[in-house]
Each structure stands twice: as C-alpha cells, then as structure tokens.
Amino acid sequence: QGGFTSFIVPYIFSILLIMAIFTSSGFLLQGLGEEKENRVMEILLSSVSSTQLITGKVLGLGIAGLIQIVVWLISARFIADMASTSIGGLLSGLTISTDFLIVSLIYFILGYLLFAIIMAGAGSIGATARESQQLSTVFTLLAVVPFFFIAHIMEFPDSGLSQFFTIFPLTAPLTVIMRMGITDIPTWQLITSMALMILTIIGSIFLAGKIFRTFLLMYGKTPKLGEIIRMLRQA
Image (cartoon, rainbow, N blue to C red; front, side):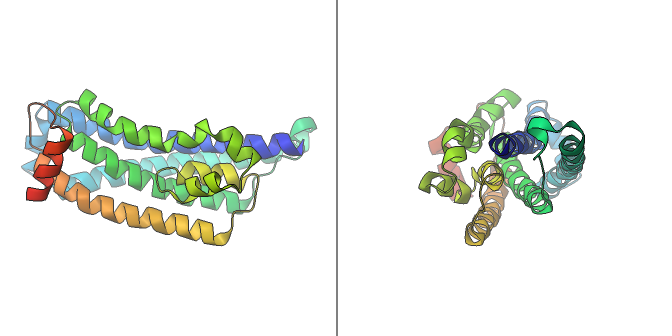
C-alpha cells in the first residue's frame, strides 16, 4: 500500500503540473504564431508596445492557468481524503500534505513563467504558427525528460541524476513533484532549484525583450540559428 500510494500521488501530480504549464504556455505560443502569420500583430502593435503585449498575454494566460491548477489541487486533496477514509484498500494510505500542495503551486508559477517566456520567444521568431511550435519542441522535450527516467527517480530519489534534474531549471518542476512524494528533499536543494529558476526567468525576460524587438514584425521564412544569434548581437 505504501509503495503504491507513494508512487501514484507524485506521478499523477507531475502529469497535472506539466499539463497545466504547457496548456497555458501553448496557448500563448499558438496565439502569437497565428497573429504574426495573419499580420494581426501589426494592428496590435499600433496600439500597444511589444512589451505590453507580451506581458498582457503572459499574465492573462498565467492567471487562467493558476486558477486551473488551484482547482485541480483542491479537488485532488478532497478526493484523496475521501478515498483514504471511504474506499480503503490500496488507497487507505493516500494522503496529500499541505506542503506538497504549496510546493506544487510554487513550481507551477515558476514553470509557467519560464516556459511562457520561452514560448513567446519562439512565437516571435517563427514565421508561421507551425514553425513556432517546431522551435519550441526542444524545450518541451527537455521539460519532460524526467518522465523517461521515472523508474530511476522513483527507485533512487536521492541519486545524483535525480538531484541534477531537481536543480536544472527546465526539468525542476516535474522532478521536484516526483521526488516530494517519496523522499524528503533537502531544503538547500529546493532553495537552489527555485533560485536558479528565478535567475533563468530573469535572464529569459532580458533575452526575450531583444527577440520581441527584433523578430516580432519580421515576416517571410524563419531565420536559422546563426542568423538569430547575429541579429540578436546587433540588436
């Protein structure tokens, strides 16, 4: 029973977390790509600055995603309490702590901000919505890498690999949720993980600002990596 419940809670929550992050940031990516492809961006930027436009989109979709994840967390807590007392059996030991819920919420916010900024940058560079999605694929794959190592993380939650995934900003949200259900993550690892995510978000905002100004109104074909680097240096 203990093994089942210690596995199922972090597994389900990690799926919910990554779904919430990429649903919200994915809408941002798709919206920017379509607006740029259909030349709606020119009309929007005649009324607001690129910074105001992106900030509004990130915050608007972020609030919607936050409401979504809060509803999911509260529902999961309620269902877990009901299952552990009423159903029994394998679910008799199913509990979701308040600390787990708070950390999940923090990592949703940090994860959403990080990936929303990355998606916004990809949406600005891509000439079409499809090309923008292709550009963002590498970051999406990096975020879900912990799923490929889920057996290792669940069996060896304190291994070097598990700790690396906890600290690396792109894999941190998923890994922390997985590990919290089966081990006590040292406070220094959580603080380091959150600090690195915040620093990465700040750096991404700075880089995204250059990307928006350089590529948001650029049409035609999607520039290659070398062209992107050269144009950002000149910006």
